[in-house]
Image (cartoon, rainbow, N blue to C red; front, side):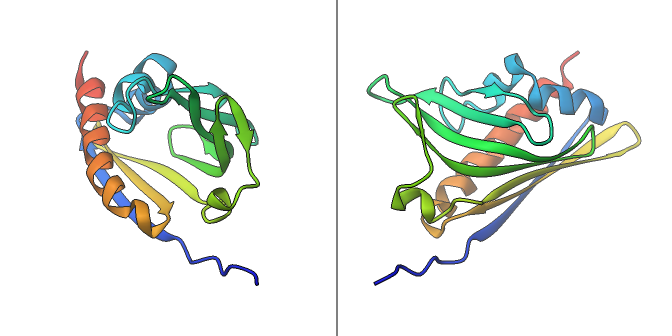
Length: 157
């Protein structure tokens, strides 16, 4: 019997940052500052790969057992300083990409989108993310903390 894939839930988050969108974009996507604003998701988070359209990118951290884990994804769209879309393809388990296990099939193809809208030198960052129902509460706690950290580092000189 084939399992029926439940539809993804779409979550929306936003924050207004007192900085121009080019600065916010760079803080969100550069290696050093990415490691800072993503701490609420997982201490030690970082990425490998490129934010270029069509590029493979991996979001990684060491789990509680010291194994390299995370997600393997691709950049589906990148309009500099305006919009970026990430398509999640699978997990990274002990350093190895896996796109085939049932756990992954539930949410493979999920998107995480960032839009940047600037008015008067201030930027609104809008995040839309697809998620499985079981992760909604977790993301509703983590995303506001992560965006607050992005705001903090973007507003520093």
